[in-house]
Image (cartoon, rainbow over all chains, first blue to last red; front, side, top):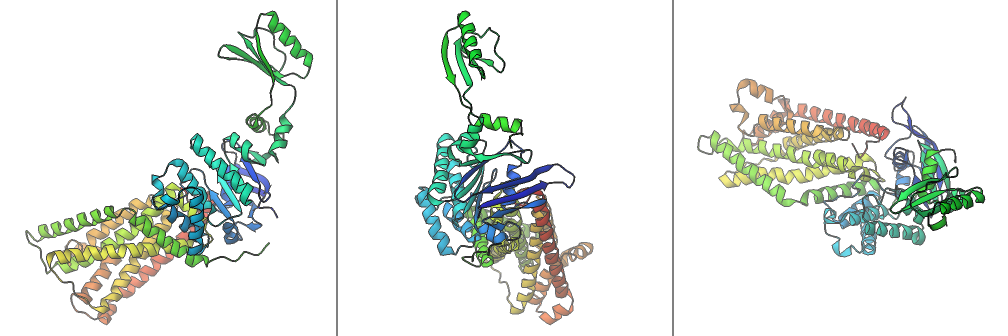
Length: 310
Length: 270
């Protein structure tokens, strides 16, 4: 059984308005980390809100651990932990301990069970000594770690994380990334992650689902998605001075500091050799020639610009 | 569909207990603020009584106003705990996190209302007792007065619940609540007994159910009237009907606002 199942989900905020999510279907298998990507306004947060039971869908359904989030709300919520974007997620006036026990009780844990779980989570975070301090006194990174711990308090099967690294510095982002990796790898948690930090997705996610204008435009294992867009004929040449030659079709030149980067796709190897000859004839020194592969960022930009790769 | 896994604890009692603990801890996070507010208010109350007594504290008039000032503080603090905190949580998003509970929303709201009562009650008692002790007057006590006292508390809590149900979608209700609370302070006899009000003002004040309840308490405690006599006057049945109407409207608004907020994504976030 899938950990998360979204079936033909459509959400319109006004009856005649545009669909924020338009017939989206998505499944996430247990124990996997899926990057849920899309430009601003693509419908990511709307989908997350439907999955957390904070928003009703216009049509379609959403299930957590097989339980419908509307009709079997309590069962679905007991299997779900979430960190929402733009929210505090935890009470800043309460201590880390009070927050974790509170959210554990809301998920139906007995007080003793919530306390034991809170102790474990705070110890793992290195916050046990500071358990009685108000969360408002913590750094932004530590507050986010407490929010993730609060989402984990009832040991849910599924974690929904909406921009969990937003606004964090490099060290805090690394700490969150390490924690998420460990949660999936060591504890078998299923994680659906939305973020604009694509390095986080490339490093962590087994699969990537991309939506644009409320519709799915790609849903593939990360490696497969990257491989689809990778080719062996994309080259980058770095030369001294300007590239005052006629560039082959598909090539562009960009000035960078004291050199120029000429890059493009050379379907015909002869075109590349002719370009190098022309540059040499102009007296340009060739600093380097490199076969380049697109990263997730360029794949993502291609997908959302041309939603024909679904 | 698979069967729901058994909950580790009954969700409604667990959520109720969690909300009460959280709410009290939230309020007690800044105890000095409450102490200072109370000290300033008591000082102002006594100062006002001194001015109105033209340079003396009228111990014959103070008991009635102390009952009224206690009612005001119960109203003020229950609103602060239930309405102001809810608005703040909607703004910061913590109410959304709390909404992902296994318990229904009404359980969380009931927990918040219980917190409001538990926190506001000692504040109201202190606001009445401290000035009484300071000026050396003894507030009379009569067990029969518990009935109008309880009805007064229930009426205030029903009003607070109604305001909180509105607050789920409308943050401006915080300002309306403050306005109504100030109106109650002016008209419930906290400054001077209602008997000393101009006639038209006393008549207007009696339109407020809190004023009626306070008058009922006054009659039992200060005038020695029996509960049956107060009941037959119609004040208490009116108070019960008003409380039931407030609670009914609150429940309807809570249901409606939850449904609307789930449709437009404003549950837990304005």
